[in-house]
Length: 405
Ligand SMILES: Nc1ncnc2c1ncn2[C@@H]1O[C@H](COP(=O)(O)OP(=O)(O)OP(=O)(O)O)[C@@H](O)[C@H]1O
Ligand SMILES: [Mg+2]
Image (spheres, rainbow, N blue to C red):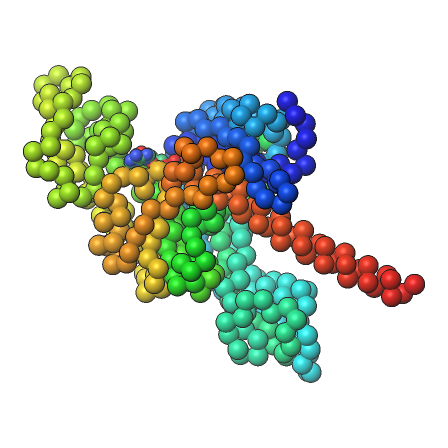
């Protein structure tokens, strides 16, 4: 296997249904897909790692597949964090720049952000991202990048995305035990947004809703910045379990039924649509009306979107969705989800297919891969930004040293 991995970016998404490892590298400045591994997750409960042994095994298996596909040894990764323990918080803080107007530098921006983040946090909360929503310079709001502008007071409206410290630690421990060092953690809904949203949508206001297996994570963008992040405790697995209970069939069969014939809108299913059941339970009917299936799925879909709406209302962003709602995650594949979203939230909805990276196989253009592909894009973008900052610092230091000799 090739050992050359300076430019390698590897992401690990331990979902409640699937564990995914994706590898890409930088080829002449552009992201080039190298390979991936996906296996069914194990040791997960309610979106959290509940048993380390099986979860580690799944990560190892996914990683080995990715190594074979990418022809490289993988020993480090960036992990995704999502699930019901995600909380977002909006804060504000600022600094005085002195008595006379002066130019703002990066240090001032850092200090203003430090002030805004200095809020009381429950002890078990870890900060995942500090996301400036806007800067306010001498009471003038709406500033994205204040570096180089002049003023006497700089304030920032900040969104702080946090997660449970123990959940993050379990994810890191799981990756470590599978032989992977973790360099960074990324909020999964922010990552999924990276792979699916346009700049216009972020500007006009949009809700990214990632419907996973055990929970659905949301991130709202408004005026180009993150305005709200949250999670609701319903995902695709709840739909499957409802079918298994309601139709008295094994969970695996209910999952298959949902994927092949499920619809979240009863009236979209023809009244006479019927399928045969391969091995009916003793005493159960040998045929099944697809309307009956939809009658079980629709209330769950409505409940999910009701929780989403309540969450958006709590966050004060229900009116901010000018560009509507974008659904990602495997749960977005259920026909009818867009209609239910549109009717519950009263905004347009579309499915978020991830962008296709160069050399990426077609099967990854699926909403279930939006998070992992978005993580690759996020890591790439932040590395490019950091490299540019370091370069400009190096150039400035160069200039200082050149001037002093
Ligand atoms: N074609 C389909 N129709 C309906 N549901 C589907 C389809 N394909 C996948 N799903 C559902 O998507 C869910 C898995 O989605 P995804 O792969 O995004 O989850 P995950 O990332 O493992 O979980 P999470 O993000 O909650 O940790 C499962 O509940 C599955 O039933
Ligand atoms: Mg997921």
